[in-house]
Image 1 (tube, one colour):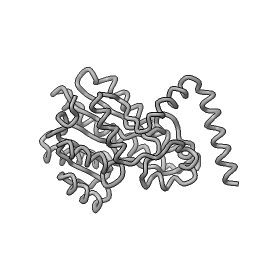
Image 2 (cartoon, rainbow, N blue to C red):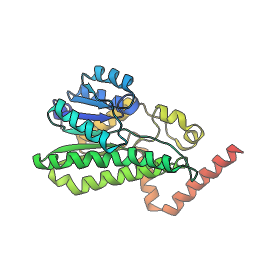
Image 3 (cartoon, rainbow, N blue to C red):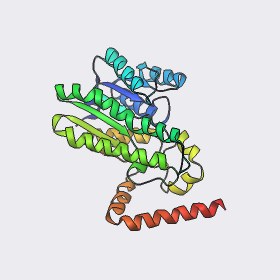
Image 4 (cartoon, rainbow, N blue to C red):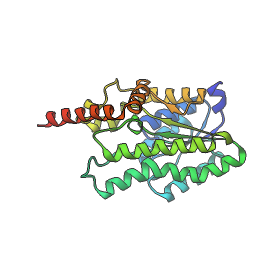
Length: 262
């Protein structure tokens, strides 16, 4: 299958597109001939990406039902129809049991419910016409775990779970679903992770462009998981094969971190 030919002319929405992975995916899709609507809270950065991609900038908040609905409405008006939705917006706020209710709420709203709300609107239309593609930018933390952030890790697990449900429920009716699950990526989020990133990201951090390339490969090969770090597949298998051994290893990492902090 020729990815470029498949995406050429298709209407695509990318959230969290002002920088990092979202920007890279948007520009890569534009290079394949897709027609773009991009969204983000960062209006200035978003406008720059829209100009680079030759698309429409729709500033907005993926954390609210109204924000998601408004984006899809405006994107449909501009594109005619939405063929691909890249639910890329994500946050990481709060860490362990001291994370506030507000921290948990924003992680749930952006990392999970934004996907659910977009799918509620898009999937019925896609089922009527027999095709549609939904992309969730999750994380290796959603397949494995991230010690440093209970909020982020838990909601990324939920995002992967929702994507799996979508694929299992609608694959035979023309809905194609992909979950992008990188480990470390050279973004502002990784930089802010500090000591936890040094401990947890054992494999070389990828560039956002490499993540975009991996998504294109998953689309071409019709694979659910897009793994910019292929070794994550092995970690995922090891975790499933012997969960207690996996958790013991993770606990040793936790102890190493606590020792460093002393």
